[in-house]
Image (cartoon, rainbow, N blue to C red; front, side, top):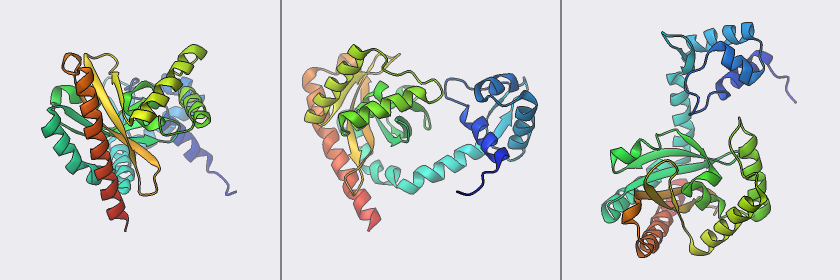
Length: 254
């Protein structure tokens, strides 16, 4: 194994300590989250500001800098998901009269939101680049429904241990999650209320040309507008949109 450069490892730990719910942090807070001494954290943060991976705030503290967005965008662009899904997303937004989200399943059981089309008032609830533990949102459950039960358990445990993300600690709640995922697998889509909003989301899994689950397409609208029959219709429409997107991904990879 190649020898690791310790300063680079520590800088990566500093960057990974930032989460959507934390926003800006002081050196003291970064040190507490990473276990890196404050003097070292200060030196690392100063260097990361110079290369625009962090941004120093006038009132004190740091937040992720613009270079992280540029780098992240290149990673997600490489998958081709946004390009492949955009035509189907526009069709969904028109036909369903709803807000449409594209999200990608990433390592350790998280969903990252990549692209939005539709109502800008709903868009604010899931900003591009925001991360949510897969088992806590409809999009993530749509993706998880395609995994085996043992894999799901490992995924939830990893998400729970990644920087304090909440997990399913109650055995009864975990069993309920597995039942919900089994039902979603049979139907081909998931419907659930979006936490902290008056919205209901219906989501279906996206697969790459090899059949691996890579993300989800979803539509969100007011809970009052989503009747059981509407859920079923949206679910089938989403499945067709996901199939179209998968075909576009396959054509792109040829």
